[in-house]
Length: 148
Image (tube, rainbow, N blue to C red; front, side, top):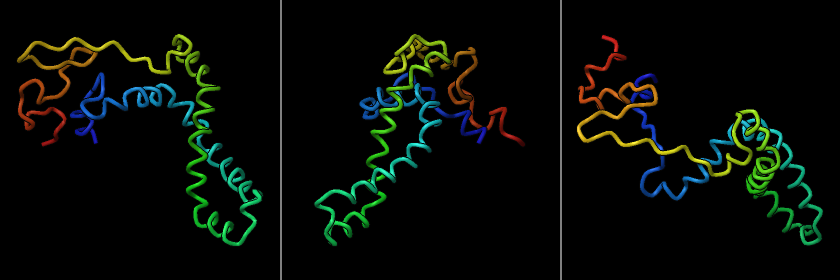
């Protein structure tokens, strides 16, 4: 695991085709605590909401009940995402307050992109250490984390 962490990329922005997801990924990263704290409760709340579908007039037939029974979990999955979005919107400001961020900065705020190192130089993380042994031009076998 330590070796995988050593070689994991530290992206300032998502590369290539993943760049379209950048704002959503940033939002979910900035609201990770809010999502983590609320998601189990929201999952539990979706099942009573799905149960309310049985009360709709067009679901009173045997065919409607069977259709709902066969897709019950899919309805719960579909309903939980808007609920998570609503809670993130309603309570996300508390996470900003706790993190001492400007209110609302969690929506799509990005860190300033780091300057690129000159060609032939190793990329460095925020501490100034090389990002990975291969970035410093050293072969993997010289990695200090590998045990001999």
